[in-house]
Each structure stands twice: as structure tokens, then as C-alpha cells.
Image (cartoon, rainbow, N blue to C red):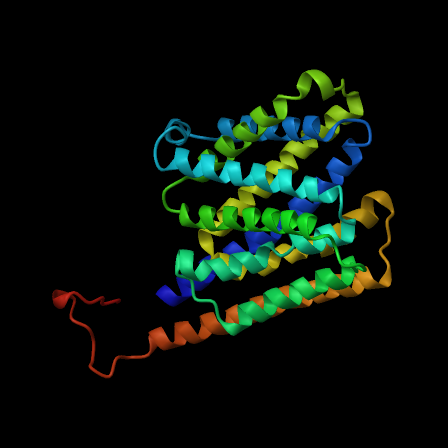
Length: 316
């Protein structure tokens, strides 16, 4: 019974993570439409403020007060600092790297998550998870098609961005039992909004009615994406969820075609197909592993039923 419960919780985490990456890729499409006429920092500020408002409306008094208490405050500040570091290094690297090179380096983040999940979280990382993650990364490389050897410094900055993002996943999983989702949403986005507010007097512009509607949609979609992401991390191991990040490539193809009429070339389609295969393979491997665990736990003990009086478990 416990094996079935654990397996259903894991599948819920996987489903939530798929929904989160679908939302995040749709968020990118909305941002793309907005930054044509508005600065990026203003768009991100509006998104963060709206998420704070939405999350605060649905949070209890206890959840709101926990933002300022340990360990929630410390974890939120550290995650926020890592997110800011990821943004700074990512956009600094973008000045010198081609987009394909930038995307390829940044999508090393799941590799860092899988590598760090064992020493930092004690997760079991089998060959199947490694192969699924590497296959997804190969799909990104095929789609991005980086042609020339990049400069060392920009490549290093892009990898720092990937490592920073990977560490935010590790921290979120580590804090799953001590920090509630509302606190993470409000604390992280409030910190980000404050940072984006600094250049406001020099960069912010007045949005028109269409932009206001898109900003509202951005807040809803971004908020849902972050909520699904945090809830997914609570329910499943990050080494299992990491390869699912590559599904963003497939969702990006879908949204790009739906909203902008962008039909990808054959390399992008092949890469997106590899990404989907890697994610499906990861899920199938986890299904088999969960079934084997459940079957093993249901077998009777050769020593007979365990006596609860001596500290064992006895399920009726």
C-alpha cells in the first residue's frame, strides 16, 4: 500500500512538472510579445508583482508570517540570490554567444541537478535517469546546432547560470518539508520585483491596453508555472524531474507555431523529438522501478508478520 502511495505521489510530481514547463514556455511566448515595445525589466517586474498579489490572496496568515521566519527567510533569500546570479550571468554571456550556444550551455542545468542530487539530497540516481538526462541534452544540442567553438569566459558564465538554476531546484527540494509554496512564491517574486524596480525611472514605459492584458496573462501563467513547479518538486525527486525541463523545447515549438507562425526547421523538430523520447523513457523507467518496488514491498516476510510491539509496522 505504501509503495502504491509513493508511486502515485511521484506521478503527481511528474505531471505537475510537465504542466509547469508548459506554462513557463507559454510565459516566454508572452514575454516575447511584450518586449517588442516594453523593456524586459518592466515586464518581469509586472509579472513578479502580479504573482505576489495572487499568491498573497490565496495564502493563510500563517503562510504569510512564515516568510519572515527561519528557515523560510534564509532559503528564500539564498534562492533569490541564485536566481539573480543566473539572470546576470546568462544575459552577460548572451552578449558574446550565439543564441544556439547560449541555450545549449544553459540547458546543462538538469545535468547539474542530477549530479548534485545524490551528495546534497541523498537521492538514488540510477543509470536510467542519467541516460534520460543525457538524451534530452543531446536533443537540445541537435536543435540548437552550435557551430563554432565559443569563447571560454562567456561559456563559463553560461555554465554558472546553469549551475545557479540547478541549485535553486536542489534548495527547493531540500526545503520541501519546511517552507510552504505560498511563502516561496511571495518571497522569491517580491525580492525579484524589488531588484527590477531599481532601473524604473530610466527604463520603464507606459503600456497600452493590449500590453496590460498581456501582462495580466503573464502574471497568471507565470504564477501557475511556479506553483506547479514548487508542488512538483515537493512530490518527486529532482533527479527524476530534471530531464523534464527539456520538454520546454517541444512546448516552445508548439507555442511558437500557434502564436507567431514560427515553423521550426528539421533539426529543431528532430531535437524536440529526442527530448520527448527522453522524457517518455524517464517516465517509463520510473514506472517500472515503482512497480518493482511495490511488488517487493507486498511480498510476505520469510520470518512471518512483523510484531508491532517490537517496533515494526503491521498493515491490515
